Image (cartoon, rainbow, N blue to C red):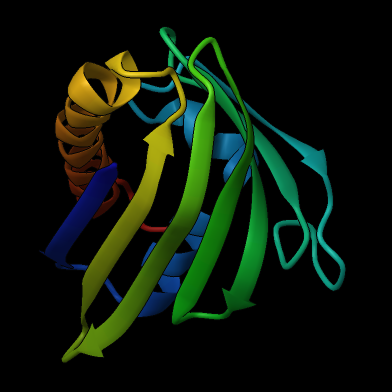
Length: 148
């Protein structure tokens, strides 16, 4: 099982951080993400609850469904489809807290890569390591992005 946990402080207001994380169609502007697009709009707003996004990281791609959308404090998602590695995704959650004009971000992703034996022994650990680096890098890029 992979269990990615990142806690990071960003020197930006919570509303700006939330907007950058919620704009799924623009994820391809981040290093490490080759392509992104919004496949289905959310129920009450474009990137909101129920939205489905596609992310291509080069070696793996995902369709992720937004399962919780509480502006500007929480954004949860579930990987519904992945290729070429099959995932059983149990939790994806991004929580934001205001900290005197800065934002504390807690990002958690849990699941398992469902390739018998190799998934648990190799791919889960590798995905966890790469996921932690990738999430941390994305948050650093958000901190450095121009104000909206």
